[in-house]
Image 1 (cartoon, rainbow, N blue to C red):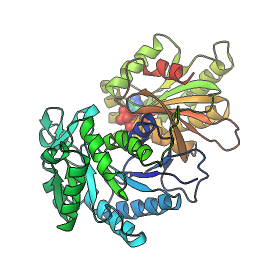
Image 2 (image 1 turned 90 degrees about the vertical axis):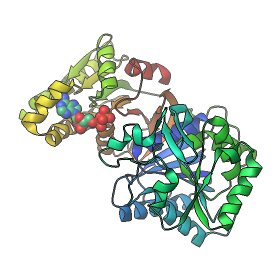
Image 3 (image 1 turned 45 degrees about the vertical axis):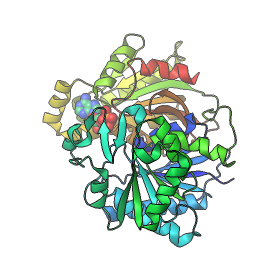
Image 4 (image 1 turned 180 degrees about the vertical axis):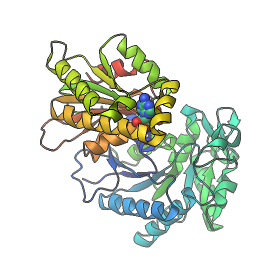
Length: 437
Ligand code: ADP
């Protein structure tokens, strides 16, 4: 079966964010980690999001990886390609949003027939639900312009200019234009005419104003048949309705339905973000947990063995249906202490290695429902378990859905929720398992 939408996301959590929005809008969605080596048997799947690490890597690498993802998605029959980046347009003058968009559009034009929109692409970074909006081409975070939102201090891609036409013009030799709100309020036909006029004038990329969900619906109406669109996950909310209107997408009652979850429940937390610290505390008031400490971990393997024994005793005990937590999460002063002794990188590494090892052992011994807190920690766990694809399920909290991954040698899939640092309400660790039940 062919998919409708193939998305290329420039980082992992951004990929999940888009996939989550697509499921909520009625598409059955799978996220793959990197470009799979072969085509996948995608049963009952409407959209695939390929998660790359191309946001801050060298531009040549970003182009190469994105083109490989494009080719793979075309092989899966994708009718539309969505290049997904951050709603704060994270990029530098060297790229990667402009060069990757140029490369994708050129490749699509070279490999398919001329069709509506194949001469240009739209740029829709806005995500009004998260208060990222664009007006007259200027990106706002809440009530601040992008360059006054804190993003001007970002360590990898400081955003010092909120005028996206100007920002993108520095990243591409091609012409950049604007679809302003004045056009959007006139509706889909007016926007289509405007885009066609810009294409005739040689404008390759069109930054699109977006203030609210109604604007997203107009944008989706105008570009659903374009071979390539680009933007944040907001556009993902509104495209599925257009695919249904076009007769591409069938109505499904529960796009986030997963197989029944099986096995014991475990939380691994390696995030020291403020939200996670609150979630750990909340959990420990209700359930049992085991704390890891990088300094002790670095001395010998004893603490890791103790953590395993603790989890095993729980898995075999009377309360095995309840979730249990293993955490390295610690307040800033304790983190600093460990970093001073071991160095920041080594402190992070011993914790990540411990979490990876625990995940491998305990999933092998019967854990079937796993919550992981921390972006880097999630990356370590996913690669330790050799997970390549995640079917996206129901949302626990905004941006964080349950997912399921097939595991070699096991009939039931692993249910997995990957939460990056500051996501989720205080009761996330307990409520997650209720959402899954
Ligand atoms: P977040 O999403 O909150 O940023 P990450 O998992 O991406 O979480 O990053 C947290 C980093 O901190 C990881 O590298 C983790 O191994 C490390 N870490 C976790 N606990 C400690 C600790 N107690 N001391 C020092 N580093 C820690």
